[in-house]
Image (tube, rainbow, N blue to C red; front, side, top):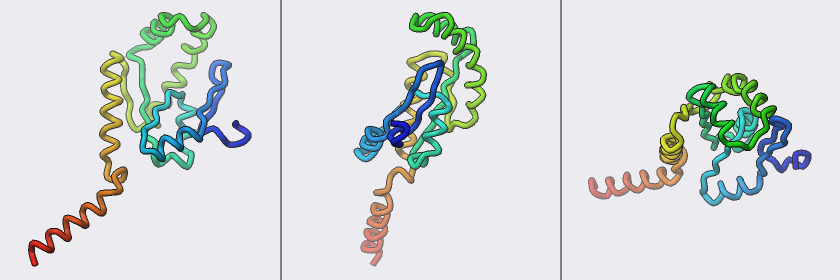
Length: 150
């Protein structure tokens, strides 16, 4: 898929290959649906630099502390000790990319962070450039005004 250009982004992270297929994302966008990615800074950079980049709203989520990040990684019980050590060793390098993002959240509480992400998505949908129908609507208001004034 990488060789055929079928991925929006791809990276090797902690010895695993990750990628996001282009076709389903483009189909979702064409249907007016939002697409949320849970990707590292490398993937985010690739998507922001892609032809879809102007549609991207980027959110970097920081842990409340490195100790809490380590506790969360351990409590998931999904990774080996070696993988956890590797993730912690890379955490500061990953975190150094926070300023490249549109929004930065500190995940002190999962529910609150989820609410903030939803608020960002709602606000971004309301941006003028994301509402192309407004031009016609305002022209209609102007025509209505002209009819009332004339």
